[in-house]
Length: 126
Image (cartoon, one colour):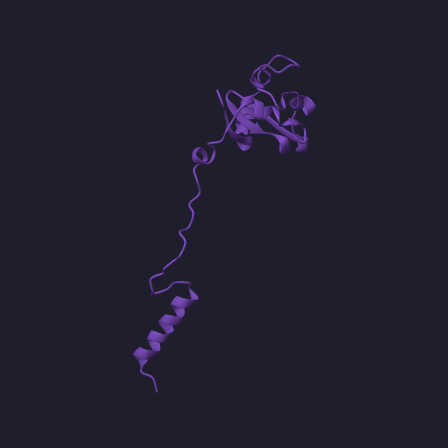
């Protein structure tokens, strides 16, 4: 008949194994990757020529104030308040269009600016 101490030791060992812990040092265990910060993850730089290769509604990059955005999904969602007007900026530096909309000459709202980070993919090469 096992002693109480031996029985408790066995229960503790089973609890450790069941909980995913190990009392033994783990060798060759890969380190858990830490999520990169937004600035570290977004170090890609695009030339204007590279942006120009994405000039259709099905593949639309645009540059605004030195940053590059992939707005393809936004176009596909048909949620742009200006409708298809956004397509005029595909494959271009659309800074002037964004800051002075062709239909009325007014800049986009702060709300529109707040959406830009959702589509950010990199920087425009100078």
